[in-house]
Picture: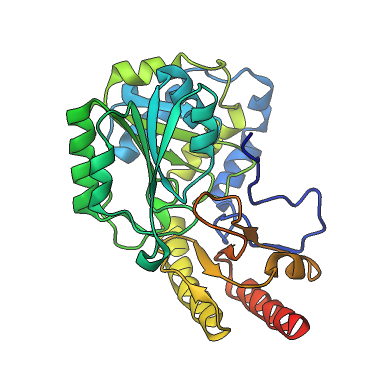
Length: 344
């Protein structure tokens, strides 16, 4: 049994600052809040099971046919639906990476293989991964990867897409954190038939509680299969309203990327000065290495960070922190300094 362990647990503990969940530090956009308030009377209706208006908005935003889009109750819901639909017998994922891929694949008794990245290489995916693709029914790539925050080389990603097409492997590229990345082109809008791009409103629009994600599928046939798997009303009325409104928040996204880029540099620099090994990140979180139980010590200061001991390929000495506002980042560093003094 795989342990169900994620960040964002503010319910069983008294937390003042939650650095364990990688949510936009600016919070939900005001335009989204207004849309929810102004449409609250619609919440009594059943949701549109086809997400017609939301898919239309996503189609314009992503330059992908609406028929190739599947909406769901967050990215995790769609991961499970894709796996339950296609029922792969063999699958490949990198390590370390997001644990829900493995949980979903285990639910259909899939034989799982890992491509292990290495600490001395900053946990980067290299071209030797191509040797493991053939014979796989499904492959997951997280870009930028969680919990490291690093990006896969675009040329290598192109080779992986090509290799998966040659081998008949369904490739799911998880881009849930891609909107935080500065100056990154992403994949071309022409998505290969066997490829799925997974995205979510959870992180960039701070809509974790509303639960809204979507898949951009390389074919309508694939999209229809995944759409038909799972319950009909997986996307609530509030989530659909919020999603449509969020797609108009272009200035908010630009402001968010600028803030996260600046504060990631600040937070990484502070952690390095404190003596921690910090790994390069392009996302809104940072992985670092610490030789003492920092998460437990910080809880005494009502601060939560992510212990990464449950990630395959990592251990109890690795921790992940979200990039927050400058004031909150300063509070975290000050608390860590006190923990170092206490522990020492």
